[in-house]
Length: 438
Image 1 (spheres, helix red, strand yellow):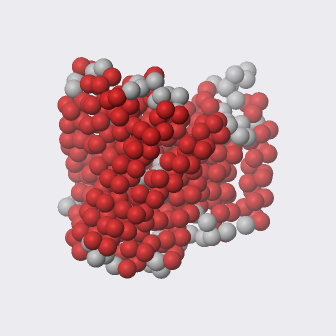
Image 2 (cartoon, one colour):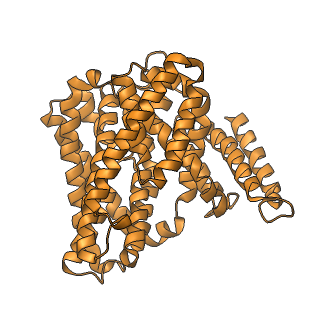
Image 3 (cartoon, rainbow, N blue to C red):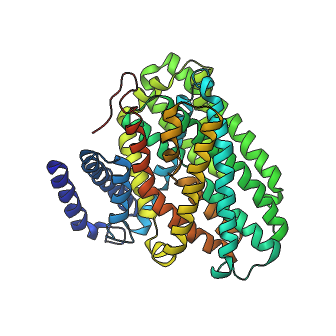
C-alpha cells in the first residue's frame, strides 16, 4: 500500500506540473490534452484501486473516488474538456462490460436459477418504480422543477423519474464480480437480475417517453413515433449484435491469437457508429456475448483471457471518468431530497429482492445477501436523465440534477455493499482458474 501511495503522489505531482502543456499552450493541439488525461487517469486510478484493494475495499470505489478528487469539481487536474473528449473510452468500456456480461450468462447453467432471477426482478423493480414515483409525486410541491406541473404532467414527470431511479447497474456488477473472481448462486442470480433489469428499464423508459410526448407535446427523432424508435433500437441493436458475434466467432476460430484486438475494434466501432445510427451499444454487445457463450462455442473464459491485459486500464479509466462526472454542486444542493430517494429506492429494491427470493424458494445465501447486490447504480440512469433533460428542459434539467445526486451516493456505497455480500456468501475467489485481486 505504501508503494501505491507513493506512486500516486508522484503521478499527481507530475500531472500538476504539466498543466502548462494543456491545449491553449503554444504549439500544443487538443489531442495532447486527451492523451495527457488518459495517461494520468490510467496511472492514478490503478494506484488508487490498489490502495483500496489493500484495505479490502472494492477497486471500483477507488477508481470512482480518484476521478471525483482529480476531476473538475474538486482537484481540477482533469479539465471538463478532457472528461468530454475521453467519451470514446467510456463507450468502449461499456461495450466490453456488456460483452463480458453476455458471455458470462450461460443459459443452460442459469436454468435452475431462472425462476429466482425472474421473481426477484418482478418483485424488486416494480416496488422500486412505485416507491420512487410516489415519493416524487409527494415531494413535487417542494421541488422547484416539478412544482409548476399539475395533473397528468406531474404524474408523467414523477413516473419518468421513478423509471430512471429504478435502474440497476450491469457495469458495476460485472466489474465487482470480475475483480473478486466470484462464482456461485449469488453471483449468477445477481448477474441475471441486473442484466434483465437493464433491458426492462430501457423498454419501460421508451414507453414512458411516448406518454411524455403526448402529455407535454413533441415528437420522436426524425419524425418517428417513440414506439417505432423503440423497435428500431431494440431489434436493430440485436441484429447488429448477431453480426458482431458471428465476426468474433470467426476470428476466434481462424485467428485466435488476435481475438482481443478484434474485440476492442468491434467495441470502438459499436460505440461510434451505434450512437450515430440510434442503436444501443450495450444491447449490441450484450446480444453478441450471449450468442458467443450459448450458440457459437466461444465461452466467457476465452473472452476474459483475451481481454485480461486491456481490461484493467480501460475499466479503471471508465469508472474514474464516471467519478469525474459526478456533480458535487447538485449533491450539496439536493442532498436531503437525494438521500430520501436513495433510502426509498434501497428499501424497495432490497425488500422486493427478499420477497422474490422467498417466493422462488431460492438458496438461503441468495435470500440473505442478494438484496445488497441491488444497490449499485451508474451509467444507465445518467444516460436516461440526459435524454430527459434534452427533451423536456423545463423540468428535465432538474430531474437530471437529482438523478446525478442519487447516483453519486449509490456509486460510492453500492460497490462496497455488493463486495460485502459476495464475501459473506463465500463466493469470492471461487471462479475456476481465477483468483480475486488484492
